[in-house]
Each structure stands twice: as structure tokens, then as C-alpha cells.
Amino acid sequence: MTLLHTLQKRYTTKAYDNDRRIPDETIAQLLEALRLSPSSVNAQPWHFIVADDNAGKERLAKATPEQSPLAYNRPKITGSSHAVLLCARQELSDTYLTTLLEKEKEDGRFATEEAFTTWKEALTHYVGLHRQAGDVEHWNQKQVYLAQGFLLLAAASMGIDATPIEGFDPTIMSEEFDLTRQKLTPLVVVTLGYHSDDDSNAKRPKSRLAYETVFSKA
Image (cartoon, rainbow, N blue to C red):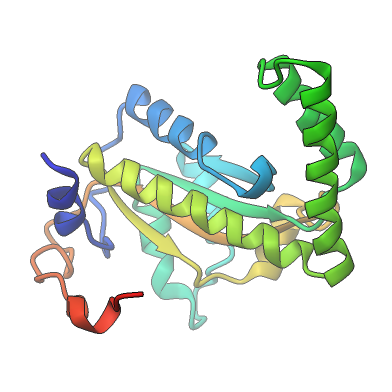
């Protein structure tokens, strides 16, 4: 299957087959794809909470309360095989940056001490620009959506259905997982699994704006 064929076939799943579970090996690969996602200056400003059983999915589903306008998303979470909550860091502290740099050093990204020092200065500079602008949290959130894209593409390439869900109560989600204390912002839940026969979106043709509408020549 070519990349374009995969992209043409993937879609947002509306209903899951509750009886089908993604194999552990496949989930491990999907989570590794998520971990390997790109981010500006390799900041990796995210944290992922994985629900791999009913108890975990029910915790996530608390943020889509019954009898609320968000309840329509509840079955997508509880009926999926797995669900992942993608969170953004609210800050990039000096301590966190040191941890990043030491990990990069450990992984052999710097041929010399001079190269390490040069990159440390560059990282500090770019993060400093966003601190001065007061938009570190927003910058971090944009990186998390890059990670979401990688997860959706990885899932589609492996024949796994997926649904990105922003329709949940962030206050409830934060309270359930103590995210405020951890200085994390919940952004999106991605559910994973296999669509059911009742999935209204499964047989609909894909619709996108025409090439001429979305592209122009520089």
C-alpha cells in the first residue's frame, strides 16, 4: 500500500468494534511512532497518558459527562481498543532543558564538547525568545499537534482506525489526572481500534478542496 493510498483511505472513525483489541506489538509500535515525533528544537514538550484497559478509558471518558453536550464522544473513548491523551507542557524550565541536553549528549548527538556548547546556546536562545514573547505554552501546544499527526499517520499505515477528539471538558480531565500540578494542559484524545459496522463514516467518500484552491506557486 502506497503512502497516498493510505492517506486516501484513512478517515475519522465514528464507532468502534468493542470486541476487537489491537495487538500489544502493534500498540507498542504506535506509541514508539508517537515518541519519535518531531518538535521544534527537539523540545519534546509533551506527555502522553495511555488508556489500555476499560478502567483507563472510563477515566478519560469522565471528561465527556453523560447528559452533557460532550456525551457524543463518550462511546468513541469507551468503545475503542486504546485511547491516548496528548498533553502539552505549560513551560520549558531550565531544569527540563538540562534534562533534554543531557539526553541528547548521552545519545551521541554531539561530536565534541564545543558542538554541545553551541547547541546549548542555540536551544537557550530559541526558548528564551518564546519566554520573552510569553507564548511558550502555545508554542508547546503546536508541537503536540505535530505528534498527533504522526500518530494518525502511523495508525493508518498499520490498518488501525483512529479518532482525534478535542470535545471533552479540560477541567474534568485535569482534575482526574492531576495535570495542573504537573503543569500539563490536556489537548486531544486519540482513540484507536477497529471500526464497527455501525460506523457512519466508514463508507463515505473522502472530500477535500481542489488542488488549485489550496496550492499556489511562489
